[in-house]
Amino acid sequence: MMNTAAGSFSDPTLGTTDGDRPLVEVKLVRWHFYMGIVFLLVSMLAGFLYSLQFLQHYPLKGIELFSPGRWRFVHTNGVAYGFIANIFLGMLHWVVPRLTNRPAASRALSYFIFFAWQGILVATVIGLLTGQAQALEWGETPVWVDPVALLGLILVAINFMTPIMKVSGPLYVTMWYFMAAFVWTVLVYAMGNFLPEYHMNGVAAGAIGGLFIHDLVGLFVTPLGWGMMYYFVPIILRKPIWSHGLSLVGFWGLAFFYPLNGIHHFLYTPIPMFLQYGAVISTIAVELVVTTVIVNFFMTLRGSGDMLRSSVPVRWFYTGMIFYFTTCLQCAFQTTLTFQKIIHFTDWVVGHAHLVMFGVFGFWMLGMLVYLLPRVMGRTRWYSESLHEWHYWITAISMLVMFFDLTIAGLVQGYMWKELASWESTLRASTPFWLVRTVSGTAMIFAQFIFAYNVMMTWLGKTSKEPVRSPAIEPGHEGLAPA
Image (cartoon, rainbow, N blue to C red; front, side, top):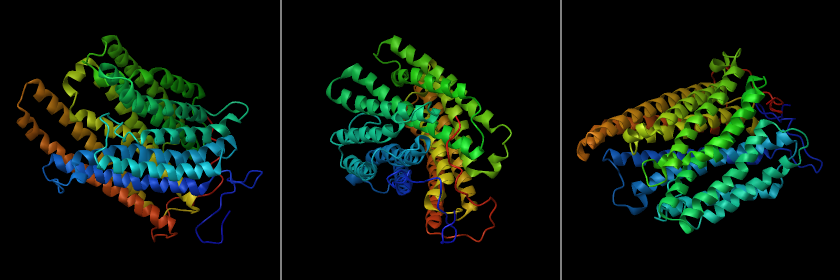
């Protein structure tokens, strides 16, 4: 349904509830997406700044607030809680009401969560830069932030579980993943940010820390990411998911095997060996679970392969799927005791982490943003489709270059350490790889600024002079996803 303003539309599927309350709080979806993009740019710039330290060209030496190690925390926490969490919150405000035909529990609570979460993020950055980080990987958030963040996660669960619990009859598989994520995320955050600090020490604290590191990805990011995929991919392809049975195998496999993986971060430690062996076996099992998910989505694409060329969102989603299979296959090998002898503490692990967090889940989120942002901005088209192509190709190529570069660097470092080479010689051998990482990272950052510019121009209602290569965006095709 077109508005009076040129190039915009109102979506009749958004509707209102009995109390004239919108089914979808579109403004909140937009705001979360905008803040997610802002934190993506900030965290990437922080990562670029940190990378210069490895090249001995750090421009802000001697300034405590700009200590490289502190900006490294801003980079990782900004991606996890600023970019990923904000994008997921916006996605939940769009998907949950559509799948339940009910708005979130409270409009006021939804807006409170938005502003409170941005406040938590700013407080986290300030705490990290002023030296208040905790000595726990992925749990560096200051002690005084943790209780507030946990309360926020509980409020998010209440806000979205309320409409889900009111649904009668079977639930879409997307809702299975979302409900699991709401419960798991609260438990994982509490486990990782309170038990090691206040109740455990030594080997036990290390084991809990390992569980937290991995479960933050597997029980927070992964179920929300898979649920998002099961909603958007069938809608974009306009066909049901290939196998409902495989979707259930993926869900229960994730629930059963992923919580057992975390100890593989601490192989060859005093942690009992039966736990280390169990982590290795369950990590390999997760690769089989991931394979069922990948097969399900690629079989859904069957007969619609041309959309990889014509649809940028589909391209983002399926490139992320290939990266996902790659990183999980890599993980199945690198967690074995044999591989750990070589790659532990090397840049191999850094390349692996970048591929899974940005090359997989970041790509999926970018695919969703390309598809959804014009709709929540009320636009019929993007400002420029060519900029989408540039954004995709620069990001994908630079991601691949960084991944291969760091993987090779890790092997070089590991084998040099194995041969007891001097520390100085390993640094000299690593420097060319670190330079490639900085260059590829710079290209990746440039691509995200291209995307941000495209978002801004679309939001302003501008249109480029390039010919339109795809049909205008039509409302009404974002209903229930078959799953």
